[in-house]
Image 1 (cartoon, rainbow, N blue to C red):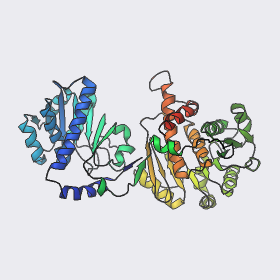
Image 2: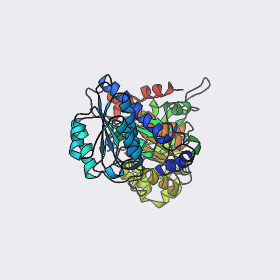
Image 3: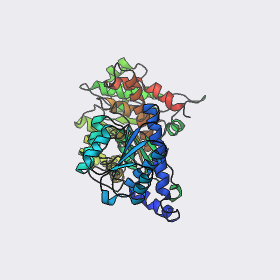
Image 4: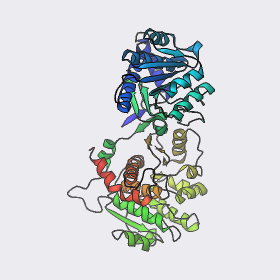
Length: 486
């Protein structure tokens, strides 16, 4: 796993490092890292660096300085470099002088910059750094649009300009980078707006000892593999975890089939289904024990409740029965709505480990959702006394004790009907196996996204939507991939 720090925490960590480092040395180290990635990107995309052209979009201050010094390093390797100064009177003096010594070209007119961008092999976005908020100013927006129109790849310096470094929200005018180079520590934008950043390279500038505990964690395959339940020689179906599924209805039987099947494929020892879609579940999954009510289901170690359940009195009673059992509970879809509607159900949820898995619309029924999705999830978890998994392109899991993890999905394959039901089944199986809700949510989110990638690869054409049933079927392959990291 790795950590993510806020821009303010990174700047605070930089202060003592800057105080004990010769002036300009930290910027030079960062710029060399940018240049190395730029050279590798040119090599990968064009087969070499001879005769290649790079344009540096240099804003005011240190971010522009990083770009200008990177231009200096590229000129030393024989790359043609043009720097477009967006604030000529505020350009970094030392970086500008260094580029001049290497005969780098400098322009200040936007139209000249557009002409240079049109002929470039790579653009360095050094317009604004992590202290900026809001969209690009008109000149910068024109240059960013020119790069997009000409399909010139953009390498972002620290963060893509115009994308909020704390929340990952992109303004109307913002850079979309093919790759990003950052310094010292990853920032929230790198995981909350992964498609805007592209792959992120972290350049070590010595901040590690100065950084506080990371407020955000990102899980990797090895973390999930270490916690995924693997049956031992003395395990049986009960010791591997029995999960109950209270989901679906006569109107929405598919939710029950998807959630129950996902729980079975996620290596549960046994799945017990309780609800009005029992016949459909038996037909699709004969290994699942299906009954009509929660009371008839028998012994389980955790419950999944909500997908396709309905929000009428019967649905509310089912949720109450599940919560009263005193077992770990995953509450999704209609169960989230019911929690928002009934204060007494929210109070019952405080008495047992509960993981809620809302999308943005459902989240608004239980808490306020702002542009700062991490802060919104963290506050909701603390206020409600339960673990919140906020679904989205970047999935956020926040525990009541303040722990937060983010899973940055690189695609929108999971933006399809029923995919949340699959996630519910996987996370419920992990709850039944004994993982705490935070770990169950995080591990399930990673495997769920991996299954979507595998399912997408099985489609007939690029960009084809991935049906939730295909995500479900890809779960065993996704779990095998992750386990290989053990």
